[in-house]
Structure formats: structure tokens, C-alpha cells
Length: 76
Image 1 (cartoon, rainbow, N blue to C red):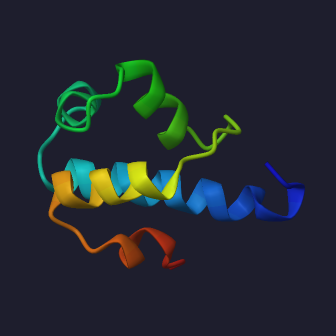
Image 2: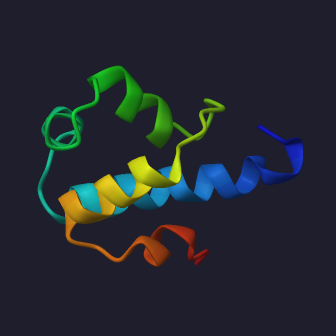
């Protein structure tokens, strides 16, 4: 991961956590829906862990949460 994108990945992870909780899902439930393990979701959502995510996986999460993928990029 390029250092210049670190903040963008943090925003994506925090947004995934926000929308997951909004839908009432646990990390484990989301992981099951996208065929990933719990540790992966935990690492993606954790702001202190540098974890990348593929576009395919982001689209899978988008579908699982019924949330447009662009919403994960919006900084508030």
C-alpha cells in the first residue's frame, strides 16, 4: 500500500464498519456473506491496521450491505 493512500483505506474501512452496523450485521456475518474470514473483516475495518482491499471484494461488500460502493469513499 502506498503511504499516500493510507488515509483513504482507513476511510473505506471505517465506512464499511458504519454501514455493516447500520444493517445490523456482525463482522462474522459479513465475512460469511462475502466468503472471507473474520480476521480479514476485522483488519479492513480497524483504523490502526494497514490492510488493502480489492475492488472485487469492495463490490462484494457493497452487495452484501446493499450499499452503493461509492459510499465507502465519502469522507465526512
